[in-house]
Image (tube, rainbow over all chains, first blue to last red; front, top):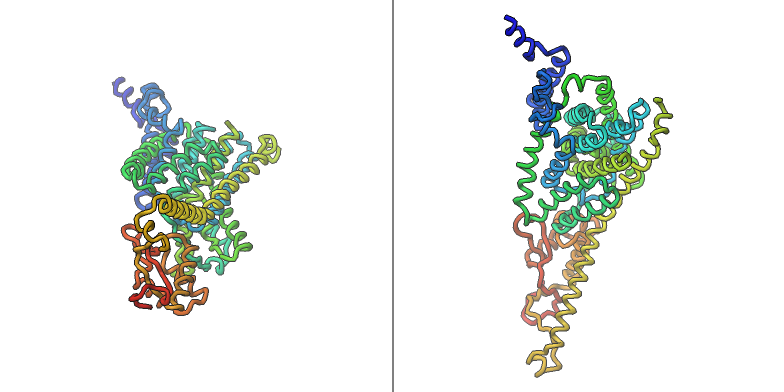
Length: 374
Length: 170
């Protein structure tokens, strides 16, 4: 009888408390949002299942938990801790991204820079709330709306916060269609939302090949700490554009990025063990992350309006919101809101420019923050 | 030590200002480079073309063929490229379209060229572009670049009065 009781005590049911139940509910919520609502399913489903895996209470010392050295999950988590997975994801993103909309109208790149305002505003807010500077920088990067960048910087500056920050970043990325529209309506007038933009010029193949090489050199000479992310992003894009390495580009944008996304999603999810994750700090991170995202959206929109003051060629300020990266969801939201005002106004193509510039901008911002706290 | 003093103690203001300046500078330099890239490539192409012309001319002078030896009074470059004669008005429109497309680069979109021509008040731009296409002066690119056009290389356009005898004027 004692043996049976001991066995029952050591099962998940015996070891669980309310925190495990709460985190399991969060995991199921993520899976629901991914499957039923189609919010970033490729991210939310693995992360959601990872949360379930990380929150099955296990007997400490058996080498099963993600934080226990020698466990399978711990080995997989090595790629997150050391910042290996994010550059590999950037390689895949580079190999699947067409930069021509950005190259066709280069001034839209500045919107991608303006949207990084959210990162630095939140960094200041986190410092003011008493977070240590490295943690404040990691929280601020959530405003870049770029999961891999957020994980990369956090793994370098505040590894213990990778779980909450990654979950916050991916949650807000998934919630782009919910978070951004109210800010877009608040900061723009109906006339501004109706602005039609002229077509960007066509971009030659040579320009597309030269861009990743020169873009990489320019950005990394100015912000060398962005090298792992931008190097892989531009390298992936060169593979895609040069056409002679199509096999490599194909692998980078399909098999490689899929494998890394699966492993990253599962391990980030599993890192949210209830005893580590459910802290007051995590709650603060979630609030600041939301603020960061909103400030980034506002920064892009307001800068687009500022550019309209000085420019003859008017920009629809809605596309400024796409500067927060979150490719391509924030560009889709700009298209959706513009389309509501004028069903024949197609903003998606224009919004992709700042959207992609936002990826570069957030990687540069992460590099800058990392270099300040190295 | 929360509040503004915490920001100052962690050099928050400096990091924010420096961070924003670096991000903006980085992307502004990138934007400036991209904006000039097309023009740089255009000048590069002209430079390469000029070098090639120079090389061709040098090779013609350094190794004179039997034709040059026998008749020194004849022009050295004998072109076998097809010549298309155009009337004065058509030639002017042709040159105008060449100027418009030069701003677009080697490869251009007809819609965009038409839009520009209309803005600049060229009369009947559709008609003229159609003529240029029909005469084979402009050609559509093959493969994945289908939908984009370029000037057909190797064609000489001349005023109908200067064109070789027998060529039909437009």
